[in-house]
Length: 112
Length: 114
Image 1 (cartoon, chains in turn brown, yellow):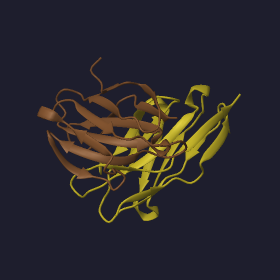
Image 2 (spheres, chains in turn brown, green):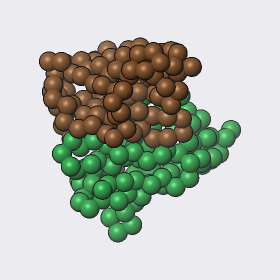
Image 3 (cartoon, rainbow over the protein chains, first blue to last red):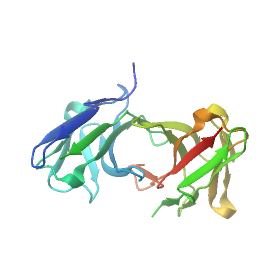
Image 4 (cartoon, rainbow over the protein chains, first blue to last red):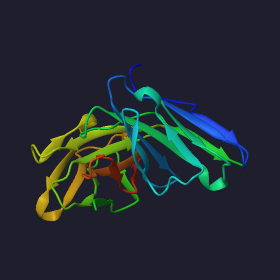
C-alpha cells in the first residue's frame, strides 16, 4: 500500500494523559498537513509542513499540541495533558503540490 | 479569506434519483475547488477537482460538478443514486496564501432510500 498511513487508528485515553499519533506520507510528497475533525463537522486545519519545516500553525493548535516532521519524512502529532474536548478524528494528508491532498484513514481519539 | 458553504447538512434521495449537493464558495482569486467523500470511520477520498480548466468536471463513481463563477457555486451531481453513495460529502476550497491548505465546508450527509 503506497497511500498515507496513520497509526494508531483508534486511541482511548484518560484525561490528563499524553498521546502521540504518527503519519507516514506518500514517499515523494514534500507537503504534509494535519487536520482535526469533530463529529458533524468538516476537517479543520491544524498545521502544515513543507519537508521538515513547520510553516503554518492554526490557532486551534494550543500549546498542549506539538507536531514534528524530522528529516521531512514521517510526522508525529503529540497532545499533552489531554482534555475531553480533544476527542476527535485526527487526519493527516500529504501532497506533491498545491492541487490535491491525499488523506490517510485518520486516528480517532477518545478522551474519557 | 476563502470559505465554502454547504447548504443542507442532510439530503435524502431515492435509489435511482438525481443527487444534488450544493456548495458555494468565497474567494478573492480564482479558486481550486474539490469534492471529497467520507465513509464512516474512514479518511477522505477525492471525488473530483476543479483547477481552472473545464468548468464541468467529471469525477469517480459517476459524479460530476460544474464551476459557475457568476453564482460562486460548485454543486455536485449524479444522475442516478446508488445505495453505495450513502456517505458524507465535503466541498473544499484551496487557501491561496502559500500553504495551499484546504478549507472545508461542514459537510452534507447523503442518505439513499431503497
